[in-house]
Length: 329
Image (cartoon, rainbow, N blue to C red; front, side, top):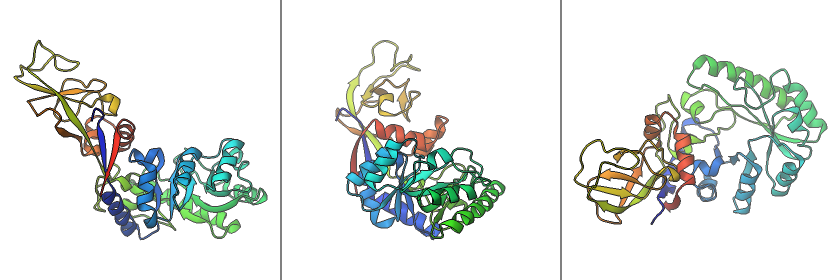
């Protein structure tokens, strides 16, 4: 009871997969990197494995954990292979690797591979002027290219989205000229909500966990899958002038202490109802509640993130690392 608890709704995860599949009319590649955005990758993946065509993770280590957990779906590692040891581990676990440059492609011989294309985000990927040579090089290395993908950097901007979509379509055609069966995937949650070209599959991340990325409105009917609860650890009749790590803004007749803080992934500036700044593992609120009462300290990650100038992504990953997890239907 001392640690806060992230309560994860498995039924909400399933609902969100259905909603995004319905919105896109495409098979879903479920992004479960960073421990499924803090929701627990192995359990989340087990729950939705029958609803998706593939999982995507950030690293070979994350992919290995899914395979070891018995996840019966292909796993794509989105970060390019950086060394021979990673390539060997990917082969051992049957993972699909990403080739995003000629140095990373050099490690992909004999491996199941997706080719990443840089259509404007300038993070990973071969440029359009390199893609033809990349496909031919992959063939010469005996890389088993099964897919080609890119990422929309601003899906809410119709002009940018259309330019990237055209560039990706051209690059994907070049790859398919060498590898005819390559699966094309471009749209993450924002692209799905924007209603652009979905190609062969979609690749949602944040939407799986119930949130639309700004500035999109949730037109898919998503349900947040996590809430964070903690426990009342003490009731106090205030003495002196403080309230947590700050002077009390007024005189209080009663305060109670909740066992969660910035060590739990919350932001030090506070949570709704907190008085003063959060401590590492506690904060105080006005009033009195019975000792041991469970209280919800975070229910809407998007609203909380907006108050603190960040994103739901960052909030979910942070609290996922700092809390115990309990799963409900």
